[in-house]
Amino acid sequence: MKQIILAIIFLTFAMYSATAQDSLHFKMTNPEIQQPVPAPALKYSQEYYLEKSARCKRAAWIMLGGGTAMLVGGCIVAENAATANDNTIDDVVSDAATAEAGAIVALIGGNLALGSIPLFITAHHYKKKAMSMNMSFKMQPYHELQQTGMTTKFIPGVSFKINF
Image (cartoon, rainbow, N blue to C red):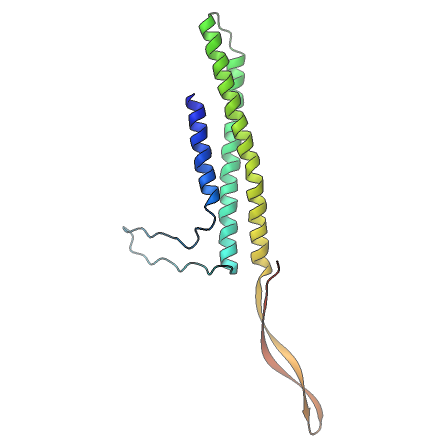
């Protein structure tokens, strides 16, 4: 029973960290360290999407690692309880309950590991969106009519591209 409660608590914390994706503008300062906090990235800028991608990827790795550990640990607990050679009926009942708890922990861990897949996909989406944004300065040619004919001159131009 303790293992199930611990698994639920771990799952709750993992899901809480995975859903806090728009907290980029709410950086808290540490009052003990008197350092200026860097300005947050503008929403929908390249830095914003890169930070969002990094947070999604971090949450996905945490979920994958925690889920894998729970899956392996639950399988080990269930296997050890199932193969125990006990003589009394109380030990058999206790081992059956332990095997069931191990199987439940393994099931939760497997689902947690599978739940990290959408976060990896989302992180890739945000990174791709950040990399598709670019701003460039170009010298744009234009034609001007002179007394001697047409001449080509260049003027500075700014282009900003966002792909969706």
